[in-house]
Length: 129
Image (cartoon, rainbow, N blue to C red):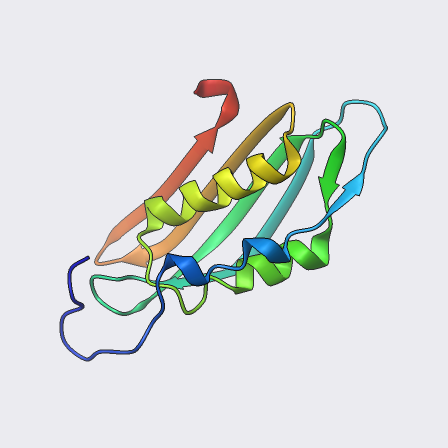
């Protein structure tokens, strides 16, 4: 991983993300699309050392479990001191939730604040894989 340029703030690597914070609730209802959105996601760009702020949108159709929301919040907050590229963060969230829930469908979208005049949005959708 390249070293950040300019001023350096300490950050942790991906192994410090707390996917063990995630918990489930049994679900036996009809198929429904569930959407969770937060505007409070942050991580650290490992190249610049500066914070990356994003909206995270999670859309899924549950199979037998739904994610418990407080555990999801704690999990997402655990990214705030992690040096991780935007695309890798999206991939990590997707993989952790897919492994946990084994949903019928899952889409994770991250919409990052503008940096250097460039808007970034990353999406992984199980229906397009």
